[in-house]
Figure 1: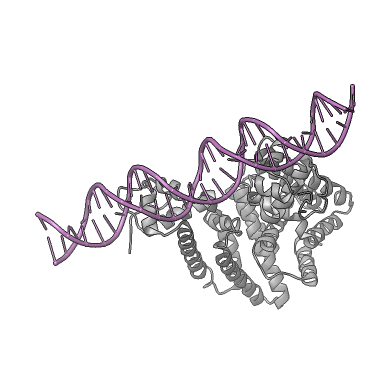
Figure 2: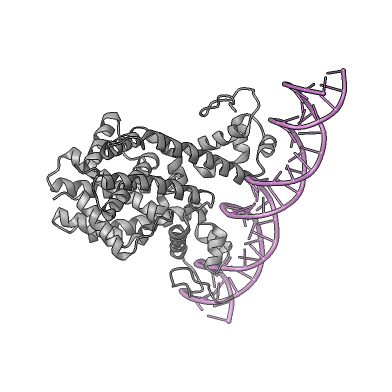
Length: 197
Length: 197
DNA sequence: CGCTGACCATACGGTCGAGTATGGTGTTGG
DNA sequence: CCAACACCATACTCGACCGTATGGTCAGCG
């Protein structure tokens, strides 16, 4: 009764929980099993408590979802801005972007999961914002490389579609799993194809 | 064995139903609202009957899902083979492939919906087969254009990822909807980027 | 004509998960 | 030390669906 069974992220030895703990737990669940897997009772059991606790912190399940997704949006937006935006040369910036997404594809599990839950009204606006931000980033880089407005827009759309599809094929479908060096070669191939010299 | 009309969501005539009608109805629902929206009672109401009818044709909801998905697999596989495979020149074949998927994106709604339901054990093997078949088609075309085995595999993967991502961004996310001529230009851009001269 | 079987309606039972009601327990400030 | 509050448990209700049981109707043979 005093031992809290841990989730994927190790931190839950505190006997009492806060709203942030629930949000993080929800995000873990979303990343591993999708939005639909976020059920109040199962999440409560996973955190070592019961639903009685949950409904003290949140009025409803939707409220938890909203809080969790908003939290994720802030995290991912900040990270994007501070890690790739500072790179001056547009080609180097794009290359870095591609290499990152290729290597740590797992960290994009939440984005991929939310992509599968767009019928849910909660996810739509957030995904629209996040996607738009990233697209703008791509368009800007391509424009700095000398492309016209239209060409840059199309190329950005193509690149981002390749990213989204890559996540789907890698995370959802079995797909012949690429190993590290194969992945490396694939990423370089993509860079060569989508970043003109 | 031909049956009544019931093409798309249209109120059906007072005729009796067959298993095929239920399967087609399920496919329509999948295309518009996803696999999760296939509920026995609501589908029955949509077809103008009650569940009593359903359980005469199918033993369970899963059986309907399996039948519907299998039916779709056959349709899409046959269509793919007879419409693009015959084209001799690999570049022309690829171009035709890209143009098709660009123009009638709506007809790929089921593929996109099933992509979002891969956690369901029913969809996995079907999607694995369909995806593999299409990937093979791409790889073969690229090989015929003189690429090495590795390069062709990477390029095929990139192209297919772009296809899958395109579906997601177009069908699920709002995304600045492309109009006909814009779409045309985008498709040509993709062709230029992914089919080397 | 009357029987048979395909097709359908109605009513009921069972499960699962969200949300509510209410009371209990540990921590903390006055 | 003892209220007050934050956090949690237990035991419900309620609605959405799946699946079952059983009886009704219409078409087409024999």
